Amino acid sequence: MNGILVATGFGCRMFSRAGEAPTELPGRLVSALAPDIGGACLAVVDKQQIWRRSANGQWSQLATAGIGLQSILSVGGTLFCGAMEEPVMLRIPPGGEPERLKSFDHVPGRSEWRAGGPPLGVRSLTATADGAVILAAVHVGGIPRSADQGETWTPTIPIMFDVHEVCSHPALPNIVAAAAAVGLCVSRDAGRNWNVLSEGLQLTNSLAAAALADEVLFSIQDGPFAKRSQLWRWRISGARVEQVRDGLPQWLHGKIDTAHIAAGAGQAAILDGGGNLWLSRAGSSGWQRLSTGLPYAFALLIL
Image (cartoon, rainbow, N blue to C red; front, side, top):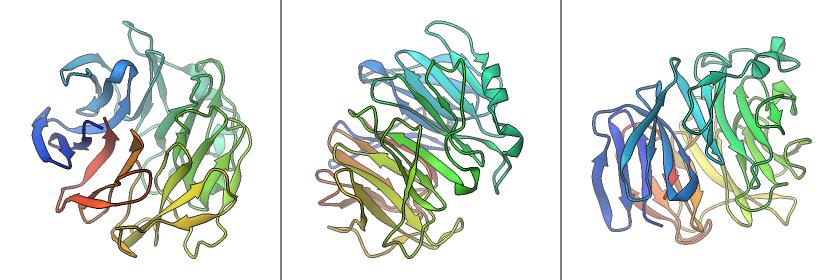
């Protein structure tokens, strides 16, 4: 692991166990992060611009979307971007210009999508480990699924589940998970069908999820305006969920919001609503607090 990139309203801050590095893209609003091929990563900058950070830390602008963006995804070099104040999907081929996917405008059941607090938008995006399937968490509109690089989309999960974030397993194409108001939703067939794992949860409202090699981490909080939250996990070989401690307190401050759990390089990081940044030693064990008092951040990414 090289570090944890934290997207904020004043640039990207980089943390590691050695401390904090100089801020990258200082003064810029960075509202979404996603891994890219070759050790690079992508960012939404100033709401409408798409930037790429190379493996050696150099930033360059790739495109301007023309609409406000909330989520971004790279699938083999082709970019998919979800809008933040309307349920719109853009696709950008390598070296090309953004195009609006009209197919996403006609997902069956779209007329039932509705705003739920924040405006209706594409809150998160993921692709299965083999890149064959793209999944979009629409708030509030379920999880549309595409198996043909965005040419067509089909609905997959009840809208009433109120999904906040969808994530894919780093190596197993069949495993995907979603954080929802009903608990953790899990699919073992690449997002076609879903089961809810909530047994043992006194609270079910989940806003964030991220997958490691043998477990999925997800947040639980006491409502959308949470004063406290917890980190939970689902071991992929099991059927139950359990709270994660091993260095974490019983309750964390505020909520662990969408995109505030990151997984990569065999480790995980979380940012709670109190501005505390935590890093695990391995998997979901051995947690250490790296920083306190951080301002609100939009996303985390382990590099």
